Image (cartoon, rainbow, N blue to C red; front, side, top):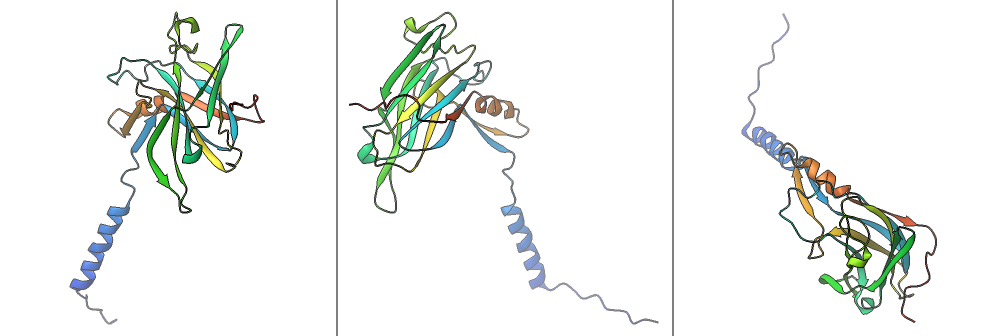
Length: 223
């Protein structure tokens, strides 16, 4: 008859180690996989000092029905990581067709967003934002003081940014947003199972943009 091996009791130390491993595994597992963040903006990384973007804005549809908001819908453009010594120079332009006529706006970045950030080399930078303007509603035209991109039906347009500083040659980040009165995009935190996923998806699809190859229009910089 083969020898029988006695069952060895699990030591208190081994049991403690097993419980510790289980706790660490649970704590580091992706328990937040079901959480997402929807925003009514989009961004692209681009090579300074100048770049154009083709922007598609889709119909508002029911994208903000769950928001307690009744203000204007605006278009903004931001550039992130702009050196502070250059933050007053950059300019933006927006152009699109209104019927058979070209519509164009050009402006400065008038808002300095967030706190100044200091890089390892001592340079300081921050985000700058330009408010392009209010989007028109159905029945309005640019004569009403709005961008002829109809909120209820959407549009296609081109946004260009120019740092107006040839010494800046690295990669930057540009962001275009369909925004509220305060210049901020609509945002929603969504969790699986709470019925909000469709809201995040709708916000994420509201505006898209792609970089345009080539130099684009003449320089936007002041002479």
